[in-house]
Image (tube, rainbow, N blue to C red; front, side, top):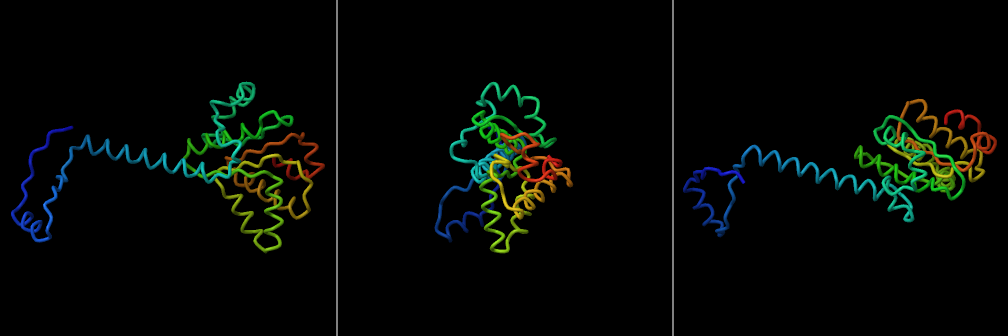
Length: 214
């Protein structure tokens, strides 16, 4: 909206336009500092929003929980998790969500994961532990286990949903331990684990090394 002085255009510019056969108006390149700053800020905000939506769409969040948002979380769950949500989304902590079947753990985990992505513009990934066990078993047969384990351990944010539901093989337990242990040893934040079992039960079902890291 600022008023700019007309800029001098040399005759050669007009001759060049005639030679290439176009008489389209070329807008001046000059722009005031205020407008330029606003344009760049809007562009950055737009690019950030596009990146955030792309990360959310590729986070493997189940279709049933695609609409999960912190604001629409079950009030009881929200009040329980309230003091833990901001530290998690601001990359200060990890999160362990425990409760009975049907209490809304997966909805809450999906909502908080999306909150993390929006807050940081970083990638996140959702995986059920039974699904992860299947993936790891397939990777073991194809000699891709190390690569896959490193991939899961390197996500800025990761949800491991329903830990302790399936009794996995010794190999899968080892892989699970490595993934969780990498968060522990590197003091990483961004991990969410949900389970309907007490840690003592998980220790018996899986490995007490895993529960000690949790």
